Image 1 (cartoon, rainbow, N blue to C red):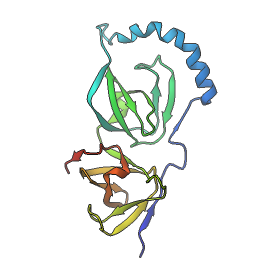
Image 2 (cartoon, rainbow, N blue to C red; image 1 turned 90 degrees about the horizontal axis):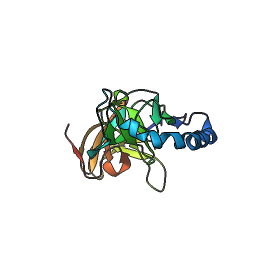
Image 3 (cartoon, helix red, strand yellow; image 1 turned 180 degrees about the horizontal axis):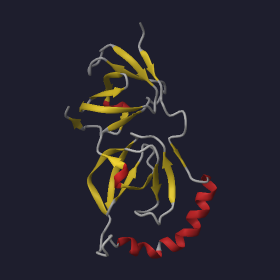
Image 4 (cartoon, rainbow, N blue to C red; image 1 turned 90 degrees about the vertical axis):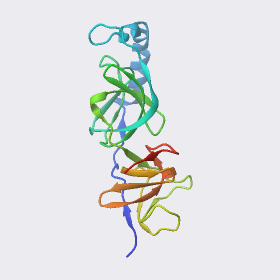
Length: 195
């Protein structure tokens, strides 16, 4: 019996822009004159005490715990929505924090702010295809030459079980196997994750 093909469960867009790109450009252009002078007010915490945007050192990967997450231009509900994630479990890189908000970066390098309550520390990863395209092999063991037990389409989300710096053990229901760490976005190149 051949290896299974695990389909990317995101036939729909992984994120959307409210009202389309043209509306977003108009909205940002219209609001930017108001937002920039008032950015100092965003430096006030919920109790009126001064708060600052702080980098998360080192940056770290988490994942989204809701199937709809608004990504905003700044750390607060008063900022416009840049785009909306529509996939629970999507890995994101947390790079800055302010009060109850995290600035995140996605696999495409886009950045924005999300409410901390919509993010979990559960580790997931996005499978990425080689430059030549195609599917990603999932192996029975984390070593070269190990039998391939399944193939996954690029963009599938896997739960990370552990990583040794070269291979990661992942779970994509119903398959558990090993993928080269270089084929995953959501784990750093030399990162080790204990089981």
